[in-house]
Image 1: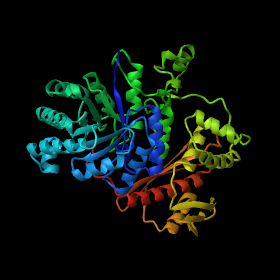
Image 2: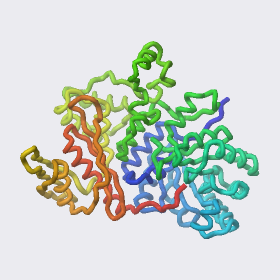
Image 3: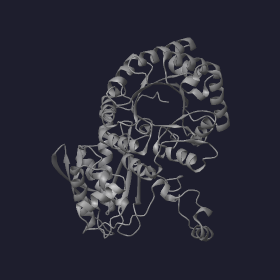
Length: 512
């Protein structure tokens, strides 16, 4: 019988630490419910001690999720552990995840603690967490750069203190696969009591080796993998759930282990994370990129037509990438829309269906056929956002080769109507200037990108912006058949996210 590898998803916590990728509570809950349906064993919902907003989001996820474990991160302190338990204690399956650095460089320059002090703090933290729950995980931050013998000493002590999961993180993405695999094997061989617990790994992708390092760890006995959807996370990101799971799925004889992941949900949740965070998936991304199953070269096309396995090592259907046979258009009714949304992975309430259906009808008047990508954008626009401070009511733009581009904008700001006209170098610049004047924002536009959600000249444009104000960076996203309108939506979404981040200050720099 194959051994199980437990999938610990930290998209809501470590993934959210991607610059500008902060999620509001409604978005976290929506994503958590989809992660549960995906089959992840544990969902790290956030860092409750970081802010009141993060605490509330973790608590709400804990209320909604029943099958997966809900995990709260905490530093090795009484205050953090208290906050973590208060946030997840009412979950059906709660877990406290506490951590402390064990590398010499971190102990000397960040913690200013000796090895003995770190060992005592780690044990005290685990014992205190165990006073609330028997389900406690301990992580040795910067474990891959720690002295292996000291690492084993710390792990032995926290196991004796009651930890049920011990985590070996490659916090700065420094390890290479063979070396990391050897470290995992060394820890397993030289840590008394390790056979009583689950050994986990948490790898970062600074050298592009997070998935490879995680596979090496599994090969050497690790049985929990800490991952994120699309590999998002701090700096270069984390181990990609879809890449790791599909490697195990596609190469079952190489690593004879199994997971509980329902792979046919992978593509949809990848799109959901991309829409919520405003971070597009690059076309050549493994598994879920737009080109992952595309074949342009003639010799490849001939082979695929003769037998797909000539150039495809997995079927697109395995990750849920199928062609819809139901055409949605302006004559489609609410029942058909509800059924189709359910088929592509969205279980919406009656009120949510009403919101999406209204936007669907508006879009269907502009497009002959509404595709799945369009529907996903409508769900994101109509359902996944909480009440915004700023919202667009009206936009009129004048532009051309012989006129000064101008934009007249009507907005709701905290429920009050406001009008403004702005000018600029082009219609989008004029629109942004008018919105900036209305909102009195001092933000800088760091990045602007646009791509088509589908093919065809009537495709919706998807615009992503990156804004910065007072050292806070936020991503904004908007979609509409009109690129200028999509740009306005994206800019306003970014401003709303900036306001959210101001109310919920950036997470502590201590992270696994």
